[in-house]
Length: 277
Image (spheres, helix red, strand yellow):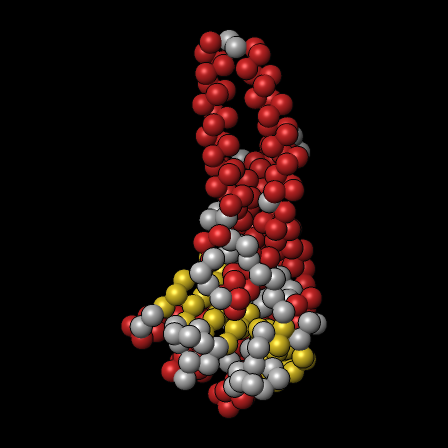
């Protein structure tokens, strides 16, 4: 048991550190964490080499205040990370596989391509690990199979459900005319409310959001608080790849935590094999 304890500790530390870094990658919290980490390392080396006692105390208290203030400043990122962990126990593999049979990347690409050609504004949020039921309740429940005719009908103005976003769960359109949180990122100042809402829900959840612009017909994809706009048909393969990612075929493709659990298990097995256990 004494031999197993350090192995288990290494596995836990690896999992926790990797999960935090992976979850914070590309976010404001990740950038701030990286900046603080570099600054702390530089100051710590400086105080260690020159034996600055007061400066070392100052760094210690600054780190404590940063830990407290980061909970408030980076609340959306932290909430999203915790929601991802909580979503692991509620994933149903059978539903995901069944959903894949009902909707393919090719079919959905043809739908948004037709909406793009007709310059019909549309907003789709694909539910993945984190539930979108809270946003779904703000709209009109449908639970319908996705077809080109239905999508054209839904997003044709001035019909009642054309405005707002649509939630897609397990390959079916679960709800339409939903209200999504609006992002306050200053980079999106020139974008319309549809695009800001897409980025907003991608900041709060792990959903992959697809937007069709009513003004230009361009197709955009929002994920992890970032938005990419595709302006030509040459990006069809990349768009289909995003749609395929939004329709995972197994639990390992949802988020990053299940994959890292497998990685920790692999390291644990290798270490125990080395000790002859």
